[in-house]
Length: 406
Ligand code: SF4
Image (cartoon, rainbow, N blue to C red; front, side, top):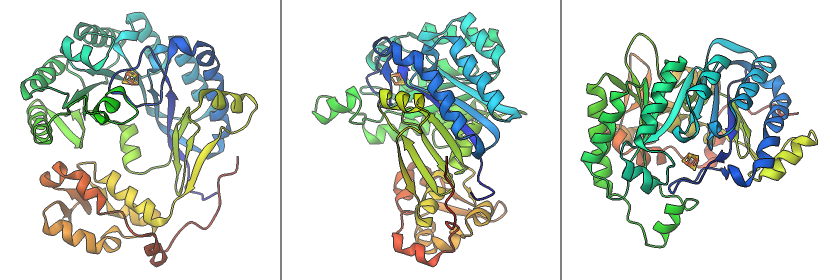
């Protein structure tokens, strides 16, 4: 095992929801249909975490995502966090996030989570208009989002993120403006703003593929993002990533979990379909609930799809994940970790991107960043960083030791 490989970020996937939302393609099951498996699931998670203890560094972030983690009893989530505290070393200021759906929590539930040590709540608000929430297939209304935030404040959560979705079929700029103003009234510390994606695994994705659903116009979508960025900046938020905004102030409210991921730090994901990446090894757990639980009950590693990345693959990840952040890619830590200088490795591509004013190099911060224009065309920029595998031959690789033996 390479000495400097140790995950600092832990993700737990809780793949249960009360009901499937129309736009969602996440790996999740309807809770009522898999109650027996859901009851066995926390034990499987514990067993999987035990298996990777040797690869853990001091955890700076723990993230309970889903699905809807809060569909499980609060005691289950608190028990898992207690186990994590006993199994790994948590940094004193570790960010411990739990995603929650307003339809699943009340004041007592949130107070239990806060008392157990969860210190960041990510609330799936999505919209503040009941008609939109209904169209999305959400089980809560706008009033429930407001109640959820009030209950979270009462429970002592001082770091709350709201997810807002935009570019919905038929949605106007005024609709999004209304949603953002309503969100801002709740004074969240963080807002994640996602445009609707129509993937084939979602109900809407299938309707779109069948020609039954009309997505938002791309120009309107770009205008929405532009408007949202302006509004949030005016209201004291800093955009630190394409879709993420943190309230400016003495405390840093940027999501540590996401930043570790975008900086391509090592992370461990446990649970159904969870992905992990330790330096040049990446894997994804099996997506079948019974197979996952059965393997761990027998003390086996769950089936995974594992991949040894080439240096070219790793470098393209460094670039397109790093460039998502407004701070961009700090090239010195990259050179230190991979022994590859992105400025030289991507010399040809960067010259083209500089010429088109899509990327800039900031000398003082020794950082490569997307320009404002590049931010709007990010997906096109990212494609430039996918290189031919044979170019790996030119690099000094550190893929010299096998390391994953559990
Ligand atoms: S959007 Fe969230 S609550 Fe809705 S089905 Fe997907 S994971 Fe579950």
